[in-house]
Length: 107
Image (cartoon, rainbow, N blue to C red; front, side, top):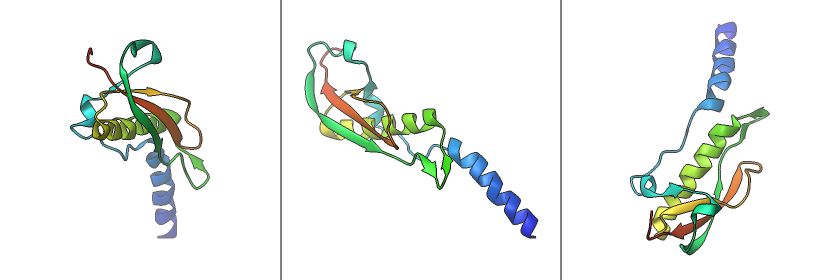
C-alpha cells in the first residue's frame, strides 16, 4: 500500500509540471500576443503583471508552460482593460512577467 501511494505521488509530480491550469476567456482569445516591432501607432492602454506557479516545492515547472500560462493571464486581463494586443516587457522571473497592453485599430 505504501509503495503504491508513493508511486502515485511521484507520478503526479512527474505529470503536474506540464499541466496547464489557466484557460483563455472568450474575450482573451481576441487579444493578440505581439512584439514591439508590430505596435506602430497603437495606443498604450496599460501595464499588466502576470504571476503564476513556476515550481511545486523544489520541482521546477516546464518553462514554456509557465510562459504560456502567463501570456494567457495577461491576454485575459488585457481584454478587460479594452486592449487587443499585449507585448512582453521582460522575461519570466520567478513565475512573473510584465506585459504592455495596447489597443491597435489595425490588426
